[in-house]
Length: 392
Image (cartoon, rainbow, N blue to C red):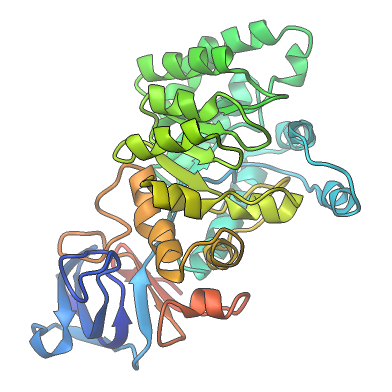
């Protein structure tokens, strides 16, 4: 195996508080990272770096762990430009717009869906994302949900069954019947292709009792729960996520004090995943990250990339939004977009640069990670390594 040393790193974010400056980011100045195959084998100050077979000169720039995007919806077809334009002209966002994408996705071929998925993955990786989760949820039939998960599972191990995105238009007059389908035949067809089960617990989608039934059935089939919770209104989603020990409660826009307390008490189990792209794209109230962090909750950032309410694949953009509008510090936002996302996926091998971790990292055309928020909209990611291989 050939070892590669990335040398002359001006500022290295490890997310390992046992090294460097001792902060949660584990910052090391004048650093070197040594990669062997798909793993990091050494991290530290350049003066102590071991010899390697090859070297890459970072020229004093910053290196960070690859972004971990723990919430996206990338298996879809169609376009919702008109809906976005109408919303920016004053129409409110509701869950119902998903039906437009459902119709387009059902009409698309497997090849079309996969090509669109790959296009968005390439776009995300150019911006530093090295791990992503993605969901079904735009088919809402047994066959369409299963094929979405099959397509996604060829590109990531973090695949989520979201048959409970909204009630299928085919069951508009029989939502109980659709819950039976989601927890029965559809679950049986989809579970072999997924790791996670999710539900949109919201007015216009699924109430608390329906969501509990769906998540419980998914867990019985071996899938780990996660929840779309409290995005559009106050509701039972966060409490349900904590009760069922879901890996994440996602959105968390409308929270009571009891919701915040519950997430803080469950900080080691349930991550509060915030999705600022959705608030940006819907002109909605921003999640209060500061309130969650100060209470002791674990917070992640993700893109929620989808064609309706957050059509961005850019984690740097979401970091900038979180710093500007959600009261996070640049350090907190970067941690949430890397180590926080890894926590939301219950992974210890990503989101960190330490011996034994997967060699996923991004080189910034900047001297510090702070530039991700300081220079919003600028393409600062100049090189990406995923599983030890530099992407081109």
